[in-house]
Length: 349
Image 1 (cartoon, rainbow, N blue to C red):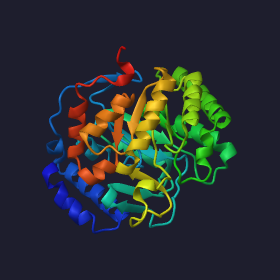
Image 2: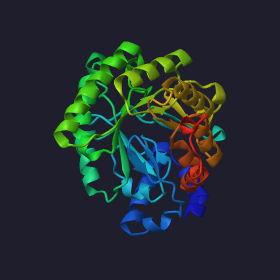
Image 3: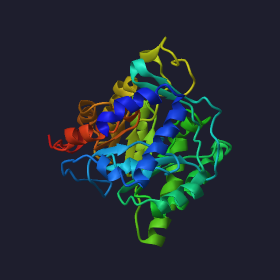
């Protein structure tokens, strides 16, 4: 199946990017219903690792954004991921931004998206998860609704956390999408501290009520200077956040300037993001100094690039755009590359 992906991609790339996305996932769902999905799973080395108190069968995860409503989890799990993150989900359904809102830049191995948290809301996501057979590590990425004022953002995040708490292995707080107005302002020191304080209070209450602690991660932007990254690390450590995901998409266009679709509004992902996202991981790792693990994401399109994230200080990695360009075989390639690697963050000097 993995060997056939280049042929499937040739067809899919003739279509509008969002149409191709929908069609590919529909095909995967059909293969799953027909019982073909188990045959897609590659043989991977045993490489269990413990992060955030959770056991991961390997270090390679699916980044949020590909399966916003958790509607395709079983099929995606067949690719061999060590964990899957769904969302971003908001408390209430919302359509996102007008189409077209997803664009390929094939020459750079990149995508531009301005999806705008299009999703069916937490109720729909939870209904989809009730139907899944997947029992692996599941991250649920939460955000605020576009029409919720930024000063009331914490209400949406707390509501979403409460809704998904019992179904998630961990919950990611997305304060870094460039496609919801004002969202990245929540990364500023005072705003972030206030939000995390509210979420930690809610988490403590939920853990006590349900007898189960669900870790909280925060996902940050690549478009932060080093001082801002260090400041976030300080706030994360101060509030006992369990992990940091670095990074989301970038507004920068230096590496794709002049290419078709490069000027489209939205966040750029894929190969051009790799260097900046990895630099953020490196600064973050030094600033956190072991206070919280890092999940490295951004520009991973090979096993070597996955390993570079660990060398920079990440404990786990996630892929999305690389999967679109390379296909399911990328998951196994990265998992094998990381199977015997000790992350830099946990190496003894």
